[in-house]
Length: 264
Image (tube, rainbow, N blue to C red; front, side, top):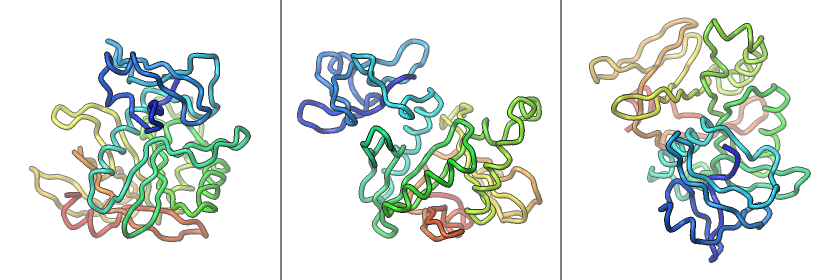
């Protein structure tokens, strides 16, 4: 998908493409929240392409165009996090810096009652350690804590794809785990019959985890193994907490909330 999920209407209010009626949206005027140029509304196609906005001209913004996978994950987390009472406000595709030479659009910005502002970055493509550091520091300097959520397909590839990916994904995951106290958070877009995308919570080493057994929750430990797979209907931001790790301000899921019985 080449485009944006959000655009400004004639009143200057941000609207989200997948939430709009296609017939109504096509007849309205839309402007880019970054450059203010006019956009076209592109409805969801029969192939499943997510509804989005696209520039009428050849204009584009480096780093803003995204894959279908990224767009789907952003929508899922945005809907889930904004519904929690601990979240005062949530903004999808929040523009942090408009400077063309330093353009930065956060996937989601949460304004929470207890922990201030949190940037949620959903990382689908392979990213270097240096880029993780640069982007985290960028947000930290502006007062935002950062929560990284990784695409399981990219950062925990199956054995058959590891040769193609090389070892760069291992270095990136190690960086995340060092900052998140031995943890990383991943998502998977494999469809669940009842609840849609399956969001996976991935602790590592000897950290306690959660699993569902006949719809009951149980805590257990297992070394160096993927544990804690469960399809969640929502991910409440009330379970997020903010702390400092390795000199950086990060947001993570509050362990006791998850271990006591899973997100409510």
